[in-house]
Image (cartoon, rainbow, N blue to C red; front, side, top):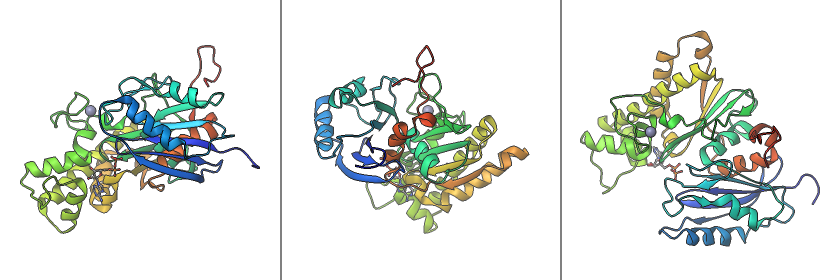
Length: 319
Ligand code: ADP
Ligand code: ZN
């Protein structure tokens, strides 16, 4: 092979496992996916991941980049993804290092990887100060300031989903109350609408069903989307003031509702972001689709100078 070697990239979610090789410009060279097995045996999931990885050629790869649902210890990456109950403290990085001896293995939160991908190759390309968000089953994010990924003390910076937008709001899966995620996550907005009398043919209607009804003019469905959009706008206004953001890129299933979400979002954002610097922020849909997580995971290796800032105690870059 000529040119810089590709990176083996892995994206581990509650619904699917995806893996591929990603070239130095973010292009996906090989790609495959498999459903995430249910059950409580951690080795069944690991075996499914290995079976998937057996189908991806990794010889000569520059390293292994991984996005995985949080929380996790970091950078050691003992992972306990909320949506994958069989992995609790699962030593993901250690297992991958044993499988790919001699290669750097870097694991980060999956939403952080999506934010990195949007900064590297997507809607926030060329901007120095960016919040990347995923609004789907949960609400996650990643923060890039001064052109570099911000990790925080334990790799958890960017957790916009747990910014409080309504202290009297619904309880959140994190144990708190009124977090953005509790209001704007797909299942949360469908649950709120049901509580307000919204009914649907489906026994267990989703955020997508709700958005479809809102588009048809159903008043409660439309109100649910407005409520989610407003919560997003309030959280983004706060984040903008705190971080002096230029661009916020939003992806994830719920963002596919389009104007139903983005119009009330903009209204709330403009109502709360009044100072000149804050008014300049732009909110845009994410540009990369389903593969954003893989592209961002690969960037942890390809663009480690910007996106893998972890330092050892003596200041040397961590592997
Ligand atoms: P995951 O959470 O597994 O990453 P997605 O990004 O597809 O998956 O997000 C799933 C959530 O997004 C579900 O709650 C679903 O109801 C919601 N959703 C999917 N499509 C739409 C849509 N067009 N409008 C509103 N919500 C949607
Ligand atoms: Zn929360």
